[in-house]
Length: 299
Image (cartoon, rainbow, N blue to C red; front, top):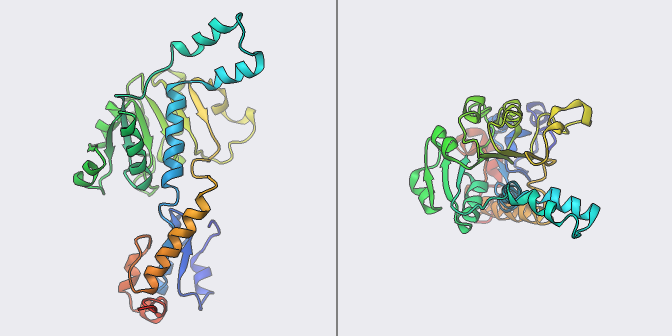
């Protein structure tokens, strides 16, 4: 899951022939180059969070569109009476918006984003996406328009960051892009904190450059005490803060082990699993002497 599998660990594990990772991104804790050099395939449960992250992201969008949390908290504290009925209604009457016919801008169009696009279309949203590794035909199959990054951000009512974190995508939602957004637009990050310029997001919220944001991932994590981070001082009607919870559901363990089991069976039958994170290993001589000993054993 999260333990570091370094080059040194691989060198001191001569009997290991295959690694299974219960993660979408095994590169975050496994040295894939070292595994490839040693002839060890790494199979991950890629897609385990496709439902949970998409649903959570959509929930955050709904909470930004219909800011009900403050109303719910006040009703719990005061009750709903004739005296406060009008002020309760005014708390959301002038700030609630519909998702219908709004533009959803996706940065990254992997499994999580694909699932989110289906949910968005069900609500009548227009979906646009930027992903240089996904072709236009694939996006059209999900009723999604392929656009360049700048166009996705500038036209979006909701910018959702779901790209995989690499050296090329770090900071992909830059200060410049954030400040090019519509003043009525919102940002949701349920991907990785380093994909966006977090300080720029807070500056944009404080300066009313954008309407609102919801951040589930942060740098560092956890955020620390209230007096040590400016993020806590952004009003809740502008910023929703959650604790890296998008992928956490009761069903996720079942998803990850089901995915891994099916891919392990593929491997044993001599098929390269879709979730293999280092497919280049299959062309190496080291694989024949090591990981290849299990490949196709059930043919």
